[in-house]
Length: 197
Image 1 (tube, rainbow, N blue to C red):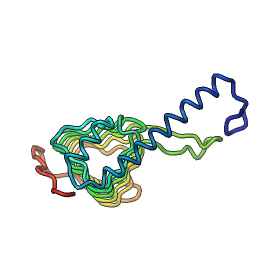
Image 2: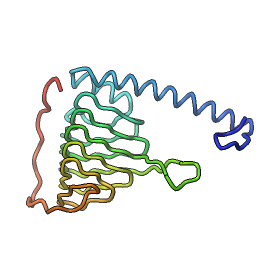
Image 3: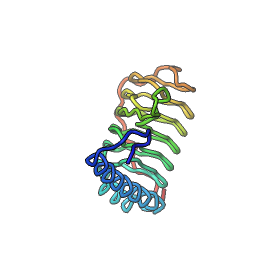
């Protein structure tokens, strides 16, 4: 037996490949189930399934309907955080979302990208960290190895490819600084998520 690049595999490598393939198929099946769960218009039911899938989140935070995941066990969400509908949360590397974070609809957060300069088109994993009191506008894309500082704002449709400092407002493709957030003390709560969302 050979790998995808034609290199012969030892018997131990073959066994490990079979085990990894079975684990991958089981994870893909569970992710499909989570996709179905995302259609249930009940925060409590969805949250129950997200928690048993390994997402670390308190009861006062919410992921709205139609969310999709990769490896939910590497996802941590803080207090009083609301994630909008159709979000994609990638946990193939650590994804940490802080307290009082507002993430709008259709935001895509990736922790993995292909290395287009690699001879085998390999993967390049990297964590994403989103600080407290951050607001991320609709349809933002966040790529691996990014930290968004406390109180930062990301404008709708931006593509975030590098770190954003605290209290700065960024937008565009790729995202660049637009302005500063003019609030000295961030101390608010997002409140109750919309029902049936």
